Length: 234
Image 1 (cartoon, helix red, strand yellow):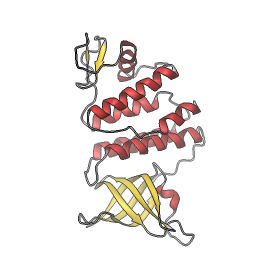
Image 2 (cartoon, helix red, strand yellow):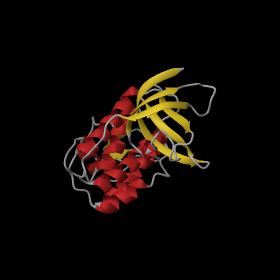
Image 3 (cartoon, rainbow, N blue to C red):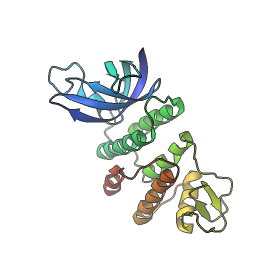
Image 4 (cartoon, helix red, strand yellow):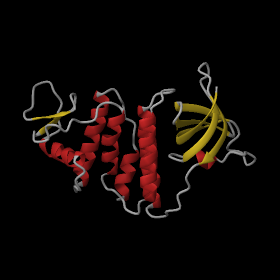
């Protein structure tokens, strides 16, 4: 089946002397894996830079459910960002978004709301002249809206965030996993879109706790590492 789609490049690995295997999130077909032959050669009509993390694209492709790798016939840049502010920071933020998104999306599962969220987030990052020191935390929180386990904000007066149920509780119960009171307070502030200054050590710990939150809801982010580089760039 041939189709056209808006798309977002996530990751790629080299294959052979001149080819790559690329994972691209498409609006129409969900996450797709493409074998792109010869793209690393000088004679290729397709530019390797289009497959770098978080490039916003338009693609022409074919889908065959019997095949492991799909066929990509054409690929073009949809948006070209000229903002040079925070170039290195944005580069690693792109890696972080791509890394996390590739871990939580399933092959061939269309999720247009999630796709639009990633697309709009990318636009926002590259058009902004300011760094958001809490961005990795905010992205992990907001992404849960599209995965089905966004934290409940109905009992924000309670002191402890319970990770399995995704809600705030007044007291800790046995055999449950909670954020401590300080971490819960930071999470509340982020849920309310408050400007909050989180110390580096506390931020790192909250990020680990949010990754645990994902794991408890069946999404394993253990091997995500790009957030550590972002922290060093601030």
